[in-house]
Image 1 (cartoon, rainbow, N blue to C red):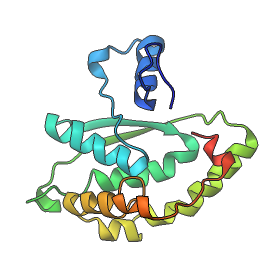
Image 2 (spheres, rainbow, N blue to C red; image 1 turned 90 degrees about the vertical axis):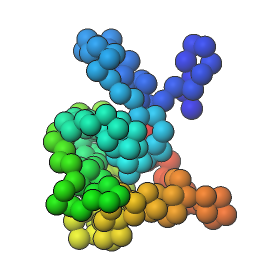
Image 3 (tube, rainbow, N blue to C red; image 1 turned 60 degrees about the vertical axis):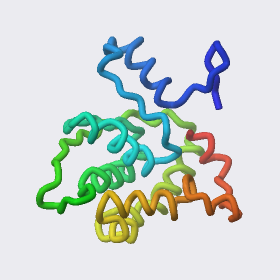
Length: 172
């Protein structure tokens, strides 16, 4: 994990926030970092539960690499559509999500490996896919994250995890 000059861990969110402030002039008060997640579903879930729902935010810009945008879009659209506890889809808050793609800037072999991984995982997350069918509410989504998702579920500590292709690792 990268560290700052003082020795503290630096998250991807803080690096991106720094870029927005230093290169695009974004005021720090307009940036909310989500540095809890370990993967895309976590990005969406923790953004919603830590920032958007508590603050009543409804307009979000989701920025990601072009290679990752189809899965990012599928995940965020679902996570921000599921109703919270005690609500139905008909009386849930509506979100205005804008998706912004940035160029990939990866070596061709790394990009090819990452695109293959993305293509293999996308069907799970699209409409009609098994993940959406099992996570129809925010409570079911929470349960899936902490019971089934191998990034967060404690059972991962007793399972052998699939190794990630070294080329794919170079895309993170």
